[in-house]
Image 1 (cartoon, helix red, strand yellow):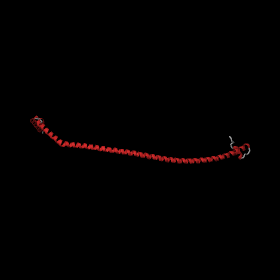
Image 2 (cartoon, rainbow, N blue to C red):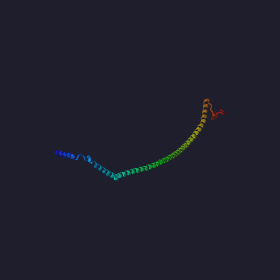
Image 3 (cartoon, rainbow, N blue to C red):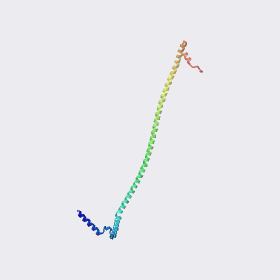
Image 4 (cartoon, rainbow, N blue to C red):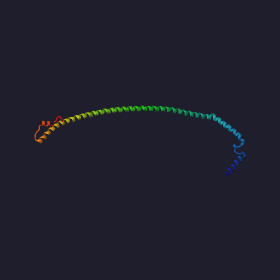
Length: 182
């Protein structure tokens, strides 16, 4: 096996020496290589410019159109959103106004009910006060009428104890009456 590899390497070396090296670097072949390069490049340019590049241009244009449509749709949706937001704000303000008026009406209604209840309670208190004052006046009058009787009785007993003489109730009452001009 080693011998066969050596034979192959030797044959390859002899073949390269006879051909003069790489064919691309062989100077007499430069002109035909350049002509084939120009023909190949021209054909490739022609194929690309006729089929591939127009398709790429169409794809790019379609993509730009799609982006523009998406931007237009986004702008339209933004306008609708702003309109909806404005309507929402308007409804919210109206709802707040209604809530404020309902709260004000409830406050006024409750204040009226409280005032009515307060007036009723005050009337009850005034009635009870008037009744109490009337009873106090009656009790005072009864007490005062008894005070004169008690004073008369007491004065009679004091005179009887002090001087030993009996005084009539009429005489004791006259003695207790205020003197005019004092």
